[in-house]
Length: 199
Image 1: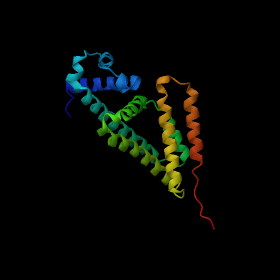
Image 2: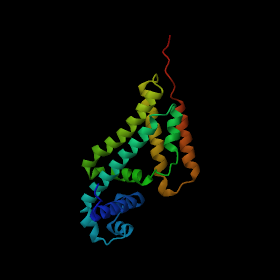
Image 3: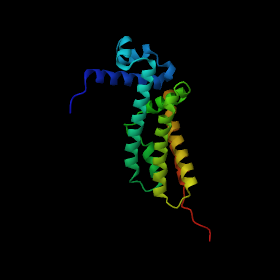
């Protein structure tokens, strides 16, 4: 396997700096000056490696969506062996050290920018739908007799709580907030009970 070129490596470093800036300052606040400073390069090099502003946004969207999908695949493999809805919540909220909230914060910033970048709408929705479908399928496997409407509602609620926990990261919230959010997801998971038909 050939080694990545210096240009590819530098492009990845600049893209990572862009991701960091968008997570901290939002899409509009991620100025070229901030990105260049974060990447440790001169501002004109941004255009050389990632193109103009629209090309940079597209590159970031592709990077965030592919990373989000890869994370969903990893989580999906872990979900395949779980036995209860509570196990699902515990796995999602476990601090495994590999979780990087910058991606979700950048995903949210890109979602906000869809009004000006309509072509990102479908890929962003598809990445979130993929995550939701994975949760729904896991819950349906774990509690096969639960009504679909209940499974979907619980999956939406757990997903929203999981995403919400990361959205507070820039504020540096008290650690208890994440624990309380996890407990809320556990309470929601406990409502998913097998459906027994009436006699």
